[in-house]
Length: 450
Image 1: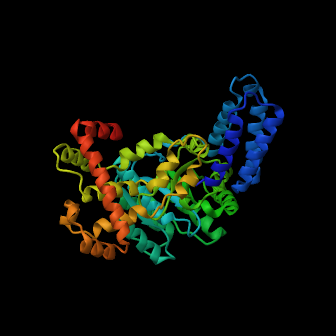
Image 2: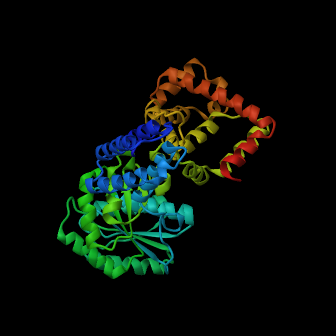
Image 3: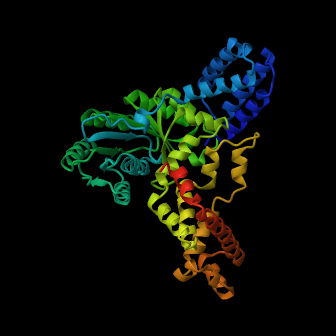
């Protein structure tokens, strides 16, 4: 997300960073480049005009002319104004306002196909993992039995309760029954997945209004496909007018290189972006922090989010077992390597990690990520899964015929098996060195905050 915009804005930042002084002409050129970057990112023109006006006013004012480092001040101005455009801080530091009598009702609204059903499950998992909340899911989409079945299956997958949908009832009565069921089940949160349409219509908006009146949700979140571009602006305006929205969830952000929808929808609805979602996996959601996202766009990294993600998704019990194992001299086997690869995959892989790290020297993190094969981790896990338990524990037994069998079983080439074994051997040596002086324990404590 924001790859194109980030690349263009970092280029502008690099040009002004090293200048000893900035003239009005320099500033005008830089602001023009920023405007072009926003337009190419498909940001709505009124949003571009407002953003550029604020940047120009501050840049030509006393902030830069009185500074000893005008280039850095210009970058700070860009960061501040991006943060302001992306919205204010999230609620309670975790995206959802839960300061209500349970069950706290969360109403999801949006067009068909934007990912509301998957988002409902992602939110349930997020609230269970981060805040230990018992959540119930309910589908109000009586027109699409497949959507009801999908939500029921996802509820089971994420460990949430599910309220059975009576397709002969009205969406309003189903919502009221779900509130009663969540209360009887002592659920902390009830997430209502509403029906959508392929396009806007008055009937849908009226139905949503009735559901809102009947359930009095603590949160009414507008779910929008980040790849919708300018279309998202019109849809956002209509939903914002019909419903008292409290926030926005952007979906499919991993497929959006421009990022214009985020800047545009936030401004049009005047509501904060609460979460961004990636992929179909139920772990693919994270709370949205405007200041951190502004830092990412400008190439400053987002180390805070990376640390939170490591603390959240690293299996601390497995990590401690690995430390104890290595310290006792038992070695780092291929099953251990598979665990490490799986945990990296759960954090979005190499590309996601690169996007959160500050990349020095004007290096483009997006282009750097392009050089990394995003499917390599999955292939390596497949190779290890094709081995027997004995082979994972004692890699030295893997010779010619075994390599051929493993390669065939995983659908990879023998060279890929050799490469993995070599990589494991190098990691095994490194782990052996770390284990000797207690360095492994120190590294784990530093990673997990333990």
